[in-house]
Length: 243
Image 1: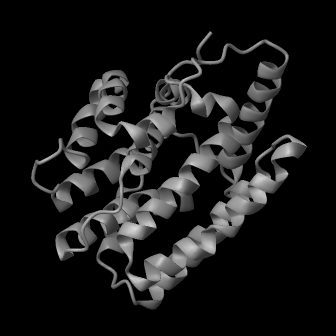
Image 2 (image 1 turned 180 degrees about the vertical axis):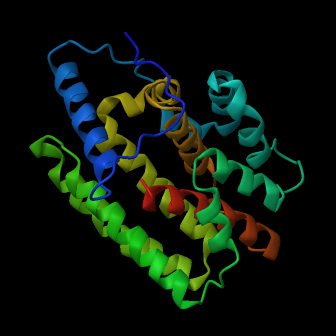
């Protein structure tokens, strides 16, 4: 039976890592159950790979499962091909739907060379590294975890250099690998996004966003596209930093 949809991520008081611990425990149990045949895996078509190879076709499938309360902000952030670049309000609205609106708007107003931004990027790298460390995997996937950890510093370097189109590509690779480490082979299912929505609406919206990031090829390096890439990147960075 699919888990019920929740309205928001639960945040436990204490050391700040309650949500991480809760997710890892539940996913660890789910993966172990799947190995014993207790969990029904989704179809074998690879969700993130499909998004990269056919983003328009995959988008139709993903949009279909979006709850009504998420659809407008999602489609505003990733408009159809040829549509005008999304406004700042679209990215801010999406961040708010993920529960990170205040932090996102604060950081959007901070210069990318400011000390506050450097501290934030350091927190992002450290928190994501910790999340990866705490993720339970089979021994055969330990090297995969280490390789993913090694990708974090190069991503931060690209952001600090202002190379946002390349950073989008690197971030997409990181999200794809992170999905596998957290969810196992379920991340390859055609219904992966719908599955995450049933765990939690904000989590589902984030992984819908993640699939769209994976689908993005590095774009032109005009100021407008750079700003759009930065706005998109910052959404994911804020979410994972506050996970």
